[in-house]
Image (tube, rainbow, N blue to C red; front, top):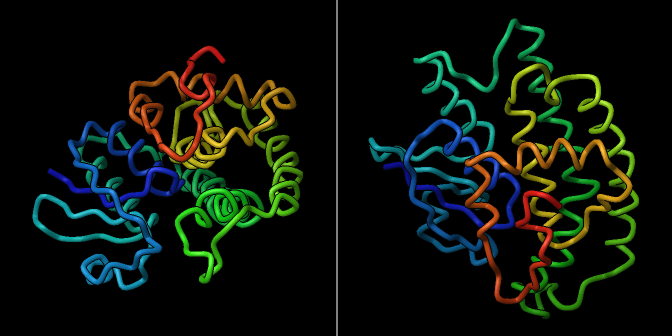
Length: 228
């Protein structure tokens, strides 16, 4: 069985959880707090970043893109890939993935997670402490035009990158699910995004994400409701 080192509110860890579930690959979750920088974990991935998997052959693969391509190679054996189509459609899927893993992550996800989650785990002397609400406000303002872009994609296509669900949908949903857990997505300003998210949220692969709980954060009811 595949072992997945993850942190529940890491968007990249969440994407791999979605992908493994959609691919019907059995896996075991191993919680890892990246700020601890455990020597045993750094031996697996010197970069100290998540996610990391150890496959059935006891080989470890680190990093969101390496793991994604690894699973896509497995899926290619039965032609059930989530990066599919001709070279142009595959490029479009990867373009959307990059947009949200790089641009959205830098302008929104990591700003909010750093203030609301990372600081909780890090000692105050090392930069932890209370969240900076001004940074969170800026991140939420940044989010608006990204939501407009998701609306455009979801309204013009069956899914974000075409007529089938793809890695692009998993990437965007993983980021939004982390922010939704923290109640930082203004769903009332993005009906089309809400409708698209409700579709992917209703998939069996998403159910385990909706069960995540942190004792230090209050989960609002809408997070786990499929009809929200």
